[in-house]
Amino acid sequence: MAIFRELPVLDSTDGPDLPPARPISPSQAAKILSGKKPEWLKIRPPAGESYGQIKELLKTGGLHTVCQEAHCPNVAECWASGTATFILGGDTCTRACRFCAIKTARVPPPLDPAEPHQVARSIAALKLKYVVLTSVDRDDLPDGGAGHFAETIREIKRLDPSIFVEALVPDFKGDESAIRIVVDSGLDVYAHNIETVARLQYRVRDPRAGYEQSLKTLEYAKAYASTFRAASRELFTKSSIMLGLGETPAELDQAFDDLLAHRVGVVTLGQYLRPSLQHLPVEKYVTPAEFDELRVRAESKGFLYVAAGPMVRSSYRAGELFIHGVLERRRGTQAQDT
Image (cartoon, rainbow, N blue to C red; front, side):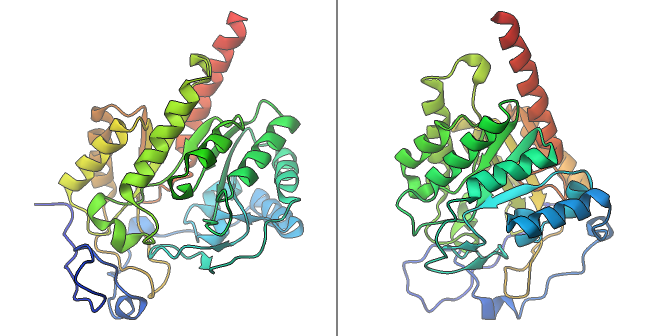
């Protein structure tokens, strides 16, 4: 029996040239009820001293985290243990992906020039050693916000060169110059999510996104970094896939192969959770055992690391700890060689 069932092709009045897996409109989505969440997806309320400290710091600093804006189910675990993923460029996105709870606008507020320094200071105050920076899509900006990413990364490294930085970036509309700006900043992990399998891209993501475009940005970042970085400072590339949107096992296998062919070393697999009735319905709640099977299958294909589970997200603490350990070992080897 197949683990996943395929989404039906819906009728559309938008024209005959749309791909077969076209989006479900918010009004259509609201009529489709997802099944009851299983026991393994119950989320405990956020609590703990560290959680409160981070929440207060973010509030007073006017900062945003993906933990809050995207309704991440791991906010309790991560904040209680003193970690957070920061959103740069504000809390308003120029794209409208059908899985995402972040608010959207064609022209968001301008960038805050003080944000890179404020974020870096907050990270220093939290005494983090591995940080993840992400952002909303800023298609309104000439470089898509790449310069803002780079400035923040440089400021973090300036305050504490020992901090490892992962940047979960947009696709920058495939602009290679924007990718170079981020890679040149000295980050350690370049992450960008393909989100779903090829067939479901247009249903799930904003039409300005694309499967091939996302893969090519990851491959270019890796190739560009390899031209000037020593082996001990190899740039990791990372991506993530949501499950439960109607993908098939064969399509997932193809996505794994495509990521590896484009030199992606780390992949995370998690359950799609519907933010509201206006978002895409859940087609399948994948069991923990099925996630384990997928992890083994992906690992057998040759990924450096695979994190898979119902609550796993792009910025996932277990994956970050693994990468941190590898980077620490490489840093130690580099120090011995010098």
